Length: 238
Image 1 (cartoon, rainbow, N blue to C red):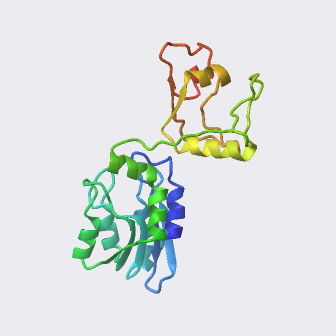
Image 2: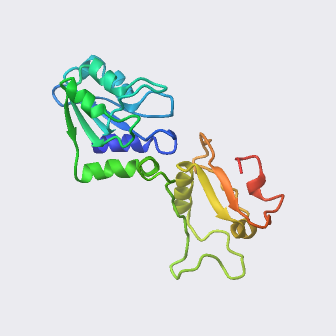
C-alpha cells in the first residue's frame, strides 16, 4: 500500500477535479508486476495503467489501490470492470470511495467473487493524507486550505526597514513552489502585493515548465493593486 501511496503522490495537483490515485498489481504469487497512477482528468485511471503494465500476469493476482475502484462510467470506463476483465482475485483498498456518484465499487467486486480488503491503521492514514485535498472537497463540500507563513526564529516576517527580500532558504522556497503546483488558487492580501510585488507563479528550481499555473487572487477591497504589479502580468490568470 505504501508504494501505491507514493505513486498517488505523483498525481497531486495534476488530476483535479479527480482524486490522486496510485495502484500496484501483484501476480498470484504476490510479486509486483505492474503499477500506475492517475495522471490527468479524462485520462486512464491508476488501475487501468497498472493492469496494462501487468498484462496477463494480473490473472489471479491482487490489486492494491489507494482509493476504492470506481463503479461508474464517466469520461473513462469503470475500474471495477477493468479489474474483473483482467481476472484480479483480490483487491486491497486504502480509502473507501466517499462520492455517491463513483461509489459501490467494492460491492460490485464482491458480488463478482473478488476478495476485497479494506485497510486500517497507518497505511489507510497514509492513503487519506495523500488525497486530503480531494477528500476534503467531497466530504466537507469546501476547499482544502494551505496556510503558508515564513518567519525567522525570533518570530519576524520581514526587516523593519523593508529591505529583506527573502527570509527563507533555497530548500524552503523549492517547497513553496511544490505546494503552489498542487493548488488551484493562491490568495494574498493587497498588502503583500504592495510590499513584495510577488508573481505568485510556479517556478520549479530545476528550470522545467510547469503543466499549469494556479489562479492568482488578490484580496483588495479598495482597488490598490498597481497596474504594473506582477500579478497583473500574463504569466498566469489573476
